[in-house]
Length: 432
Ligand code: SF4
Image (cartoon, rainbow, N blue to C red; front, side, top):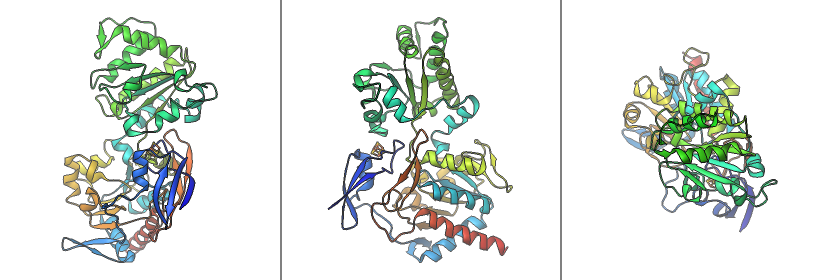
C-alpha cells in the first residue's frame, strides 16, 4: 500500500490540504486526517453508481455512446438553444471554469455557479459595503474572539473548528482556552454546545439582532427587554466581549444568507465588523460551501468583471442577479437548454425550477448518478478533480491551493471535455 501525503480534500470550503490517501492498485482505499465527509468522497462506496462511459438518451433510454457523439450532442444543445444556461462549477477546478467562461461567451449563454443559491447574498452585500476579510492563518495565530453566525461547522465544515478555534497559534499558544467562542443560531447545534456564549435568537430575526448589537456598540441603549428573543443583558455582555477583542473573526453561513433579509443581513454584519474596528481588530469570512465555489467567482471576475449570474446574450457580459440567476431563468421559463457541471440542481433546486428542467434538454458533466443525471439527455463522466485530476481551487477566504492527482483515470478532466465542446460549438456557429 502506498501513502500519498499532502493531498487536498475536494469537498468543503475548508479545503484541508493535509490529507493522506492510502492507495492500492490505483484505488484510494482509505484516508488519514480527513473528516467523515471528506473520507466518503475519497473512498468509493460499495453500490454507488459511477459512470464510466458517456451516455445519450435515445427513445427514453440511456445508451452508451462514443465521446465524439456525446460532445456533438452536447454542443448542439448549447448552440441550438436561444437562451442557454450553464450552471454549477463549484466542484471543479479553475482551469475548467475559465474554459467554461469562454464557452458561455461563444454560446451567448448565461453562466452561473452555486453562489446564486448559497453565498450570492454575501456577494451582493460586499459589493455595497466592502469586504474586511483575513486568512485562516491570521485567525489561528491571532483570534481571541471567534463568532459563528448562522452556521454549524461541526456538521457542514467538520475540521473548521479544529483548525481555527482549537488549533494553537503563534499568539494563542493554548488554542481553545485562549479564545471566546460565540455561536448565533436559533437551534441548539453541535457547534453551539461548544460555545461560551450562545445567542439563541428567533428564526428569521438576524437583522434585528445585528442592529441591536450595533446600537449598543455605538453607545445607545436597547429600549426593550429582549431583541429577537435574546435578553438585552446578554446582548450587552456580548458587545463587551466583541469590542475588547484583540483580534476577532465573524464566520457566517446559510442561516443568515438564506433567512429573511438575505443580503441586507450580510450588509449589516459587514457594517458591524466595520464599526467594531473602531475599538478592536475584527474581520469576517463567509463559510463558503463547496471546495471551489470561491474559485469560480474569482475566475469569472477576472475574466469578465462579474462574479456570477453573467449573461452573454448580447455578446458582452451583463450582470443582474434576480434576472440572470439560474432559478430566475428556469422559473421564468426563459432558458431552453442547460449544461450542468459539477453540481446537482436536480437534487437542490426548488420544485418550480425542476418543472422547467424537466421540459428542456440537459447536458450533465457528472461522474455519479444523481437526480440531475436522471433528468439529463447527455451524461459525460469526467475524471474527478483532487483525486484523478489536478487543478487549482480557492479556499473560502480566497487562498489558492493546487489540488493533486492521486490515482490515474481513463476519463477526461472537465477542462478537456469543455474544450472539446467549445471547439464543436465554434464549428456549429461558423456553419450557421
Ligand atoms: S473539513 Fe471539509 S475539506 Fe476538511 S476534510 Fe472535511 S470535508 Fe474535507
